[in-house]
Length: 180
Image 1: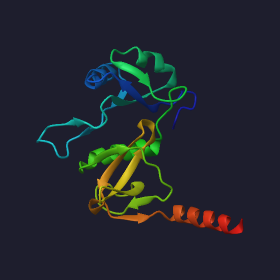
Image 2 (image 1 turned 45 degrees about the vertical axis):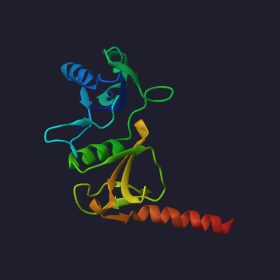
Image 3 (image 1 turned 60 degrees about the vertical axis):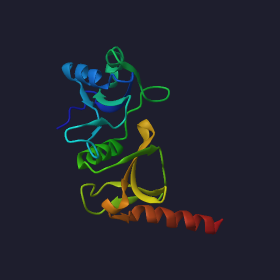
Image 4 (image 1 turned 180 degrees about the horizontal axis):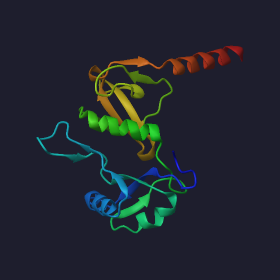
């Protein structure tokens, strides 16, 4: 049972000085604060890991702990306008699952589309996202709004289907346009 008197913790994005991600991660862990530093191993030498989003980390804490986080050496800011904004839980879970899949991925600028798809099999099964084309290639993509980036996976590795509820939304919009 969840204690409703205790403020809940949320995941936030920390901006760090370049090259300070590992130090900040170490300090946060030592303080008992949850931290997530997405690393990619796909396409790299065995054992080699690359920061997925250089200059950014994810940390879970109560909003009252912001000051403590901002005083950690290497932390520049908490993302959000005008105050720190928690990450979307669905996007954050999708990011973690995508990183665990170890599939090769491409980082693109933020993309948001209405028509959404769901992966039907493979390591990304049940993830919702969008499809897009870049330089003649088709991708399944997951947008991470908190850092304005999109993770793109080769569509051949991710069989997808249109999500029913979004098709219904498109039909409703079409019906509204016809009635005008």
